Image 1 (tube, rainbow, N blue to C red):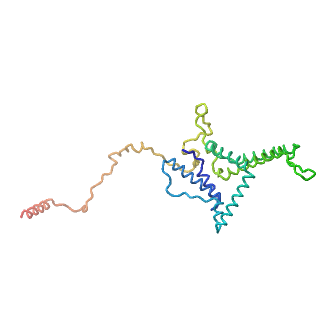
Image 2: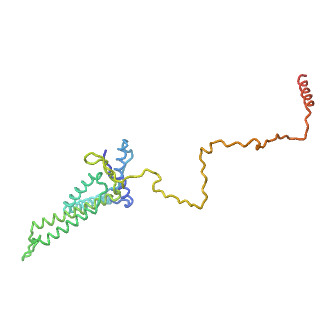
Length: 282
């Protein structure tokens, strides 16, 4: 499986800072597409059935914006001439930048976030060293004779060319890091290895340990001593049977009747019952 290089975070970072149809939007869409493909590959699913179109390159849109075929051809030739001039002037610098950024991209899963400022600092250092060397050198790249004929010191000229391309290459490396959205990768994104180089397990420092108590660090409410405290009753005390009251203190409940003063005649009741039985037999 191909290692992830935080394409999702970098894409969101570029997408929130780009406009439709710009090269930055195209880079964000390319990163998002690669993030989706990596997620599908990790889950073992097949490729997506819908088309994952991205924004077209700016020079293609500019060429196709021509109204006629002749205008499109002239625009294409103009773009090719501009690219040729760019490679003629900054060709070695572009090669240096591509090589440096390619190496950083390969080792990015181990490095983590790529920083742009070290390459700017290196460019400034190379620029200062080259300027100091030229100021203390007696050789001059170009000299003009009495007949106004330029004479070149090829050694000095070659030194200036290499010096300038190296400075430009370091600056372009920093530019590639910025334009690729590496600022969205958090610091410490790569976890520390569990084992040391000799195979022994790494000892975790006290400051790196995490307490697994969910209430660790939670604020504790202050208890006011003036407020009445609730009485805690244990379950064991509640389950114990209560002591019965003495028999002489128990109030006996008397039976309640609807008519307490009415007297009952049991002989009459028996006669009524016998009358009902004879009527049922007849």
